[in-house]
Length: 222
Image (cartoon, rainbow, N blue to C red; front, top):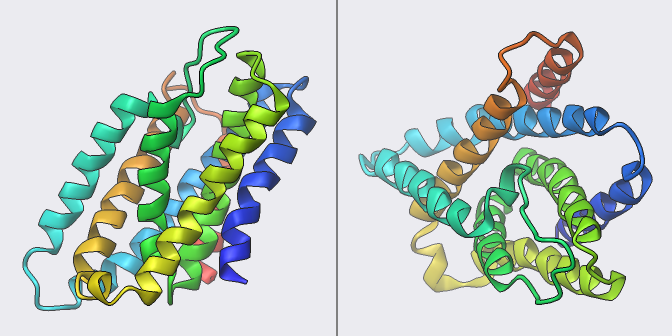
């Protein structure tokens, strides 16, 4: 069931993109802000206390490594993980760098999902707007429906793959804490970037603030 949820979240995002592609994009910004707040909250409420409850002094270092890794991935994905995609019109080539960076990000997301239902929900909620944004930009770049579906299907498989490897690989099990800490760094970078960019004009938006508060409250009571 966990793998199915992670896989289907991408296609829920695809469906959302089809519904809103001709509507006010501000509504979509609310979903993105909610997802960022929700992901950040479940990371802080569940993963951070667990990681720092151990005796390892290296947890902070691995979290910073995750943040730095996401900075590198952003260079290749142009920020797709937090809602930015830049494709040129009529681009026909398969976006290899975008796919590779998103795949690394998605596999890392899958590592801490095992045994953490809140993180599972956080990743699912995060994936929906990101998949929708990818779909919208592919449509604007005049990519064919078949190419879009191939990209999204491969992308949808990556997080379940990460979760499967974390659960069944004895080699990766030996590095559970470092890998989870790196994933937390990735979550922190992506979620805070979403929240900071949602208020980049420094104006107060009550509806967006309520969306963020809702994400925090739901994450707390999970």
